[in-house]
Image (cartoon, rainbow, N blue to C red):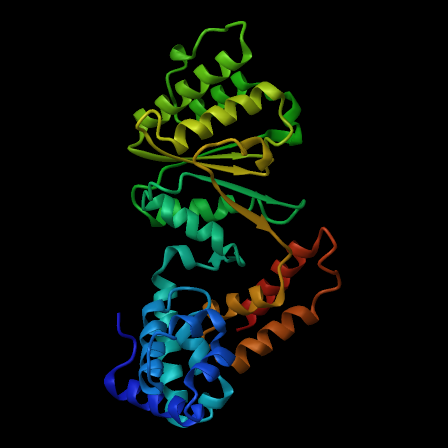
Length: 345
């Protein structure tokens, strides 16, 4: 999609050209980074390099957290020109409209801030789109880093996206050590009102039992939805045989062994237990929220997301904090401060 009309593109082109001194690639590398610069080295002339830069930035679009075109036009060397500043303002309005309509980019869920988690958002978008190459996601982080808070986002997507059928099972009471494979399998199937009478009979072999339970669960889920997404939360410290059951679930779904359109998300789980999976998996490690995360949040929710307004909102958030990123309460403290500042906008 072309984001700039011919007049806007001409204005931006001329202002960038005036800054290059005949060395477009040097300037592009300094402004946009070497990854962007290296994509343009095949273009032989200064003019063609700038034109290709604009095409590349337009192709990147506006839906991501850091659109390249906004990054380019927000350079202080460019936005000082009133005509470029006007283009930047127009694009920010377009981005705000896209963000409001994009269910995966929502940052306020039930009036609560949902900050960063960009990989989680992207993987779930691929899950909903039934991307066949992405079927397993493992989400980890330290205590109180927002792992289980993902459920709010999943609930949001269920209401916003047709055909998305999440099934959520959590270890209750923080006692995963007591969860046998039978108990977990029975709990999953009961969530979807499955046929308990079809539960496999007990056998002496733990691995055989775990494999049969995984097959039963997948078949029951597949019978009740053409495409499902199973979320297992807090099963890191379950018994060995329960880990075997989870491994067989993951292996069957990632390999599409049963020809069932299913996906699996493991929240708070040891990915080393899945290292032998032949088809691999996606990972998200939740690090403490940092200033760039809060900046991206306000770029999406601020009614007038100019650099000055975003900077003021971010500064106000951090002025309210009395804990450090090393504290367990950091995540909740940042979320509380962000919510307070958002209500003041």
